[in-house]
Length: 186
Image (tube, rainbow, N blue to C red; front, side, top):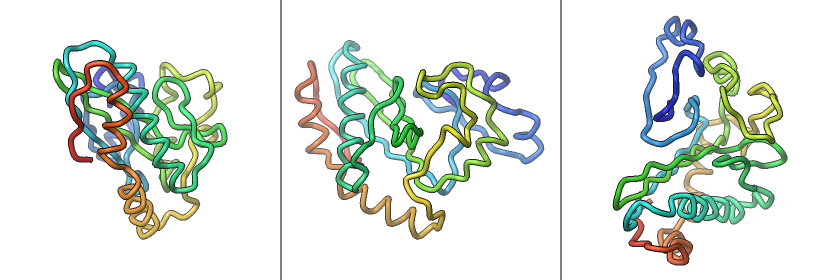
């Protein structure tokens, strides 16, 4: 759940309780999501000065993620809404940031081979949505970066992505932003 999530508005709490689904709250924003073994989560922390320009840093980190996906052959990934990664009009990733005075934490959850039926079971339709969602159900809105759901495929994707995400590339993108310090290990 995002820092501002309201569980009763975003989750089917009866299903979560019945299935003993563990619930966690993240520091970053956004609505509740389901993380399963078909997701790959990328997180990084970088030093910034002050508290200004969060949106510019967020955009630079999102561009970094899109560039890495392009290197893996996903040429048409774009940013949708505030924080989604979109391919062929479907969400294939979501991201969030958490900001303190001197640091910015960025995290992206990539839908490599997710079990979308879990989102259908545990998540209500979100209380807010980007315009491109157009009221679609989870199964019609969410996409996959792989049609294969095997653990081996997710591990291979993760290993390839790790090679494409360099701290140096992120730092170069962030240097063009005001008051940038340095990035931490990805």
